Image (cartoon, rainbow, N blue to C red; front, side, top):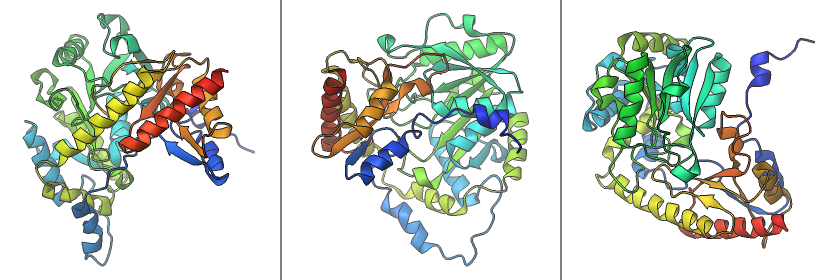
Length: 394
């Protein structure tokens, strides 16, 4: 019998989803599981976008252009123009979510064995895609004590094999929002060592104590070396649509990315029809969304900050809270909550944080919490976490 490939065998399990069978078993046993493990917003997908499905009049759902349908591309070009980014047609490719955009970015910028610098902890799929492509993920360590911001000396992490830096801003899973000075330090490093800068800007609007994050494409030093990966999933509660984009001013990278786009034929047709209606939303749409998430952030942070032995930093953006717990093994604690703990039939699912770290052994006492439920449910879930910690440690 042939063996599974080394690539497949060594692919990391998702820290977000690998314990889902335990949650399913808990639910089948009659318990209510509050899911704070995954960034799936509970906010309603705007009605004007949902109605695009019932208005769809084509008799065939056909392949579209590999770079995306014209109507949706026009919406994206207008969106980026409002950010101060003027694009030529070949510089934007519609993708199957930001996930495909990340895969394309790594595949077009790095060869097998090349290194990618990423602030640690990081979105777990960077580790998965990098590993499958044979890239080495080299972590830039950050910590809760500094709000997961960048360390002072960045040159020490660059080696002769370093080819690119990936910066998620605002950051998943930490909620850090990197200042313009920090972004400029990254760009200076890229220029000095001739590196690409891959910017994951999925949470661009989710900044709670300042303005929307400036796109990396607006920095003159980034013009020929920047790639943006983006998605509408979180912005408009469209996670299941799987729609995003890949953007670059580098014509060689854009041409290489288009070859990969052609190989997968076309991005999702119906998702583009839905997403193209983003330009019909009211001007204050995101102000309302951001106010809701700010309330949720404060609810989660204040509850955790009041728990004995828990170390947290108030997130500045995105909708995730990292927390260091008074436990030896956060995965064991999450398993305990799903298999043994309950209060009046309720329990909570969190994401163990070790899977978000590239550094071996890091994050074993941390969890990531996605504050994607309404405020009253979040407050109850945080109470459950506190109860579970007390019981677990007894």
